[in-house]
Amino acid sequence: MHPVLFYIGDFPLRSFGLMLSLAIIAGLAVSLAVAKWQGRYFEEIMDLAFYAILGGLIGARVWEVMFSWDYYSEHLLEIPAIWQGGISVQGSILGGLLAVIWYCRKHNIALWAMMDTLAPGVLVGQAIGRIGCFLNGCCYGLPHEHFGLVYPAGTDAYYAFGAQPLFPAVLFEAAWDFLALGILLMVYRRRLFPGFIALSYFVLYSMGRFTLEFWRGDSLRTLMNFKAAQVSSVITMLVALGLMYYLYQQNQQKNKSYPNKKSRKIQI
View (cartoon, rainbow, N blue to C red):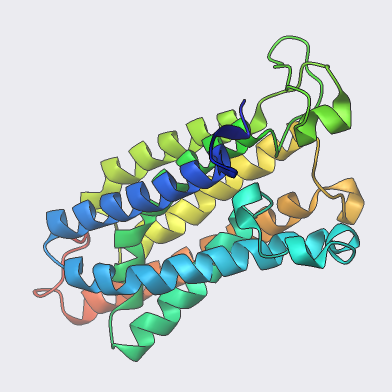
């Protein structure tokens, strides 16, 4: 865990900023590879990338600042400093999603098909970003004897718990993201309807996030002593499952109306 890798003069090269940059590049590369593989949206993703990345970064920071306003209200100059950490994955998803919706509506692109193409890249980006959280010493877990790691002095984790071994929740989340990626890629060619991959992403990510929050040591508690991320994860899962049912029913109706033009499963 090295929040600052080295200095170039007086400029610190922060591990979180580096990993965030790598996450964006890798996520974009995977989405472009999926687009090339399925033969559509390659150039559109190149154009969309700027807006989605910008929306994701703004959403991630706004979400974090909103839920940590007691601190940022007294440190206003730190609000733009995303390179120091302090961004929310769930906020980035929401911000990026809004940008994608806006772009697809503006350019008359099928939203669900585009989201299916982007979902694998989003998971790769999240996984690499979580490694950056670990190197930064933030998003730490609760004290844990068997799977705990000791964070060094100067990190948020050390400030909160000292030299106690802490559960590396973000590393497990990164591993879950890569596992979810493998599942999505295995079922990509057999997806039941446009939007199946994207909605499966929301369900799988939310399942992992909800579970791992039980071992997080830095999360806000809200309703019935659950954490804010758990509440939002449950809401996300319910909405995604509801949309899955709705889109599945729509696809079935189309298949009945045009039995010779539509197969039950989408092929690429």
